[in-house]
Amino acid sequence: MIYEFEVPGEIVGKARPRMNTRTGRAYTPTKTKLYEYGLRQWFCMNYPNFKQIENRIKVSIVAYFDIPKSTSKKKEAEMLNQSISPTKKPDIDNITKIVLDSMNKFAFKDDTQVTKLEVEKKYATEPKIYVKIEEY
Image 1 (spheres, rainbow, N blue to C red):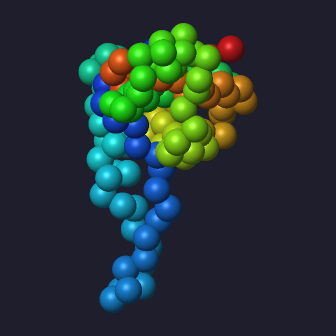
Image 2 (tube, rainbow, N blue to C red):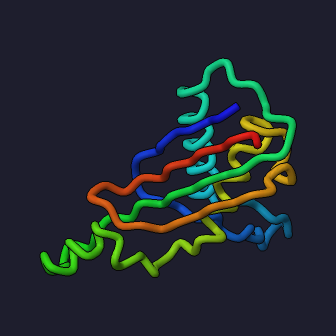
Image 3 (tube, rainbow, N blue to C red):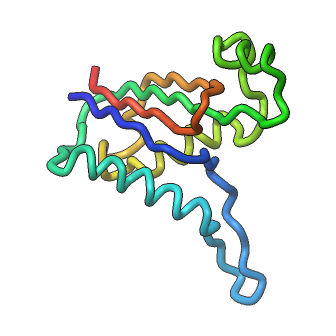
């Protein structure tokens, strides 16, 4: 079983839980919640009759970042040829965390099933995230 989809737009990394000073409770920041919800929506739109994967899983994630506007033509060409990779936020581990958390109980029962992981950051003309989840 393979699930494969792309989500256009700026990439958001998983933010740390915040603390409410009045109640003393931890909460997930709104931006993180909305991005997780958006990833789930794209998944459900592409696979309306999905079944959770029950065995071990390989996940491949490619995060495509926008090229900065002030970049020279020469440097832009290098970025598109993958000679230069993005070394900016969000960190690769936060990208992984938000994708796996959003797919929990949807594509798979729990992210403990993930035994192989490939994550890459690249430059592209349009920002997007590509996710491939496969049973192996």
